[in-house]
Image (cartoon, rainbow, N blue to C red):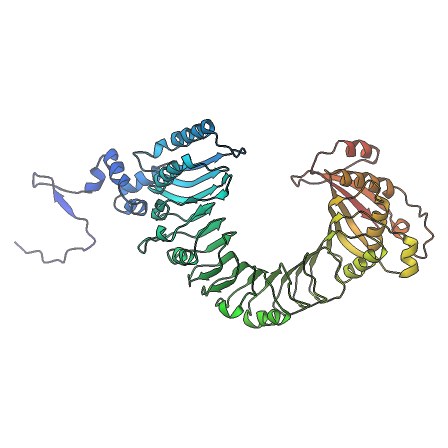
Length: 540
């Protein structure tokens, strides 16, 4: 008999005799276990290991995929500062009943969201139990927002340590907690966490650093209103976005960071402490100087988007770069004497302020969109409208002028307009009246004359709701129908060149605007709902 010397196939499945020694068959012992026993075994495993068991056996993989995905959204609103034991007891029972299915069996939890508007001390032990229960399972997203309002003010609950045992977490959002330094042990990690958001959370600088270091897969980090003096962000290779409010300094070692949104209340953002040279977007509220602005573009060669929320200490600002594509400037509080923008590749510009810039220069040949958000608090006289006209004239016809007006006096006379200066109205895409707060004696016709002498918009949009806005809509409708000019003007004012005006209404949901028939205008304006937009469409 010839001996078989062939080499065994390493990929061949293990075989087992069936006891009769006559036949052999493939066996998978794990597949033979009862489903109840499998579930019992999984219940005692860490959540991350539970997910890994799906590769052990085909039947276990089928069992894991067959588990239903749970979503929990639980809210407790209690406006009264006094404790309401009955309402609290009902809420506790409601949550316990909702989570009952998690006791004694394994589950996949997509999200667990808990909001408590008035956190009370008798909820403390319950919170520990609820968080511990959900984190024993494979949970992806944990979102907990609590407030404690008492005679002593706002207090914060201590976050249960079980939170950091949820190895499967990918999103963690916390609001209203205290994170003690002893909470996170050295061996605790959140290996799957991608998004970490902390708001109104009390924690030390040491705890912040330990927490970030335990999240190697972190992509987005937010730390807002948490009274942190200094913030240190280690080099997390996947971190792309940081949003933070600090009192003093920020140091970032994350080399691949692309978006930084930060507020430094007391000091200037130190550029030499930012080791993220691939930064593409910066949103900043911090005391800065013009020298700092120049150093910013020298350091970050890939910066395309810049939002300056404050120009404190900056008497004049000179922004010169070929890389910048989007620029936003907020001058609500601090106003530099000179603002000079030399950015030929700039595509979008947004300005927000309560004054018209007195000295403004702009070289932006590639500009495609500009939005001017004005909050007018001073008297709207002829000088104010002249500055507005000069400012708007520096942009293209794609501009949007958004106005919030809080003024007691509006004095505009087209005859004075021609006596002082003969400006040319610029072309705008849209004027949007967001909110108006005027006295009952305010001259709405003067506001209309002033705006339309400054610019000839394609549309004028007003939100229906407040009394002043509603009166303005009706006044605009009446004035728009009058095309004869009663003023002794030396130029063709808007009344001379207006060919036609259509009125449309648009619901607050943003659906397509509907044209209002001329004979039904009055009726339609009477039946508008709060938040609807009235759109005047002009043909010049």
